[in-house]
Image (cartoon, rainbow, N blue to C red; front, side):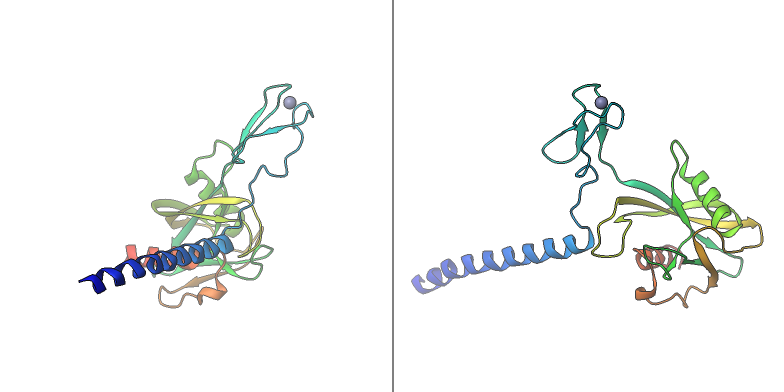
Length: 209
Ligand SMILES: [Zn+2]
C-alpha cells in the first residue's frame, strides 16, 4: 500500500509536466496559424485631430485624449460562396495576387460598410466572375488572417454561404485569374487551396452528402 501511494505521488508531477508541455505545444501551433499582432499596435496618432493616442492594456481599444475619438480592434468580415451548378460542381477561383497568389480559392470578398453579407456575395461574384448568384444557407464562419500561414495580416471573420448561379457567362475578372467548375470528388489537394478553403469544402461536403 505504501509503495502504491509513493508511485502516485511521483507520477502526479510527471503527468502535470506532460500536460504543461502539451499546452505549450498547442500555443505554438496556434501562434503559427494566427500571429499575435494586434490591429491597433502600430497606431500612434488620432486620424481625426493628430494628437497622441492612448492604448488600453490588452490592445483592444485606442482613445484620443483631445477629441474623444475611439476605435475598437475587430476582425474584418468577408462573405464568400460555394456556388453549385446543376451538375453539382463547385466554382473555384484561382487567385491573381497575394496573399496565396496562384492558389485555388472560393469567390467572395470583404463586406462593405453597412452591407448585408448576402449583398456582398452578389456584388463580389459579379465583380470576380460576372455571374449573378443567389446566396442560400450559411455553411459556417471561419476566423483567419488575410495573410499566408505564419505571416502577419489583419484578422478576418469569413462567412461562407451556399449559392446558385441565376445568370451571366462566368469570366474571370478583378483579382481572379481563372475559374473552374470542379466535381465534389475532384477538389484540389489542401496545399493548392488558399486560407482555410479545404476546411470549408469539407464542411460543405459533410452538410450535402
Ligand atoms: Zn483626436
